[in-house]
Amino acid sequence: MKNLSKIVTSSICSVGVIIGIVLTNYRDDISISRQGLEIIGNAESCRNEPYYCPANILTIGIGSTTGQIEQRIYSDDEIAVRWVSDIKQAEQCVNQYASGAKLPQSVFDATVSITFNVGCSKMKMSTMYRYLNTGDYQAACHELPRWNKSAGKVLNGLVIRREKERELCLSDLNLSQ
Image (cartoon, rainbow, N blue to C red; front, side, top):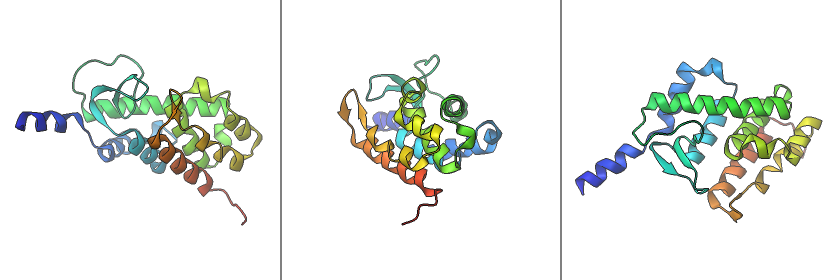
């Protein structure tokens, strides 16, 4: 039992530690806020050994599926570097296809989070991105809950993540009651 405990412990890494590394060493490389990082990190969790996500894609760290993934234990610094690279890709998509530079921070953060999760190829043609490009941020935020499926099945984790993204997305908007 002791060996099994050691294996389980070694495969889990701390999202908070990785966020700390990112904000300390790579803050100038990304535009997403701490709140956005926390939504992504807490939804994805952190593993320092490769695993298959619910969509059966080989993954490492905090939801990283890009580049070569070797069967080994990754350090916190390696995970942080991969995560920053993946976040930058999501931000580039938001900037290019959803008028990212014009978005309020909360809208930008939520949009980067969903883009990180779903991918640019799916998001760039979405109704959500169309709303962002026309400046209808409230309507865009309300599109988030629609993206709650993986392989055609509603996943509770995605339902929870999308609600957190929607709440963040709406938080900087001045909505009259």
